Length: 89
Image (cartoon, rainbow, N blue to C red; front, side, top):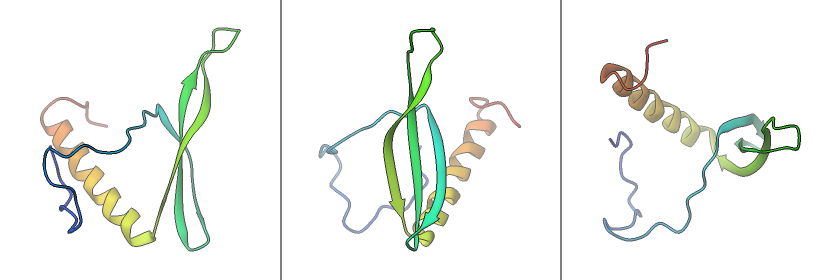
C-alpha cells in the first residue's frame, strides 16, 4: 500500500534503494535548527535479559515534509485498521 505521492526525482521501479534500517520505536521527536528531528531506536539485549533501546537512526525533515509524512502515515494506519490488520484505538 502506497499513500504518498511519488517525488519527481524518485528512482524508477525496480531500482534498488541504498539502505534499509529497522527500528522498534521512535525514541524522540524534537524541533531544532528549523528542522524536525526524529530519533529511532532498536531494542538490544542486556545481561539482565531486559531489552534496552539503542539509537539507530535520525531522520531530519523540514516541517512541511514532516506534515506530509504524518498525513501519509495516518492514511496508511486508517487503511490497516479498516482491513482489520491493525486493531482500532
